[in-house]
Length: 143
Image (cartoon, rainbow, N blue to C red; front, side, top):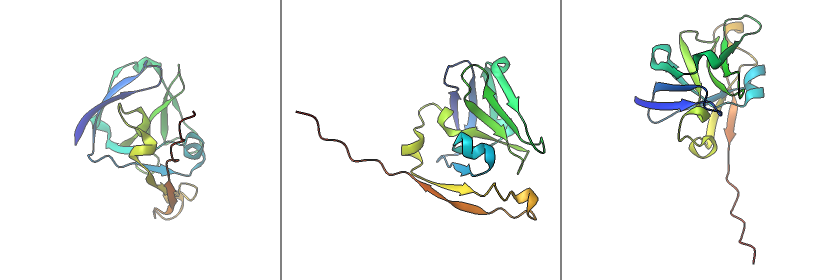
């Protein structure tokens, strides 16, 4: 585990978190995660400390109202959430961790099947697929 800092796009929210090293992230294809497109890093709730901007955070809940999706009310960036699949943890938006480059750092990432949520299908987690990023070749310099 390593202590890392992070925050939202506008800087109103800043946090410190204990994260696993090497960083491992996942995605989900449920309705909200598919729209957010967020790569998530799982951590214990006790491993997240909001250091600035707690009042800038807003919570969005829907459907079963178990999951809590926390975002900055100023810039709209999703910072973390408490997932329905395991409400004892948080998942950080990996892109909000200082120094993380989501595409380069996670060129291949597993996508969990949230459309067929484990809580609705006998507790069995399913994999929806794998998302891959291939960097485009550099364009030759114009003469």
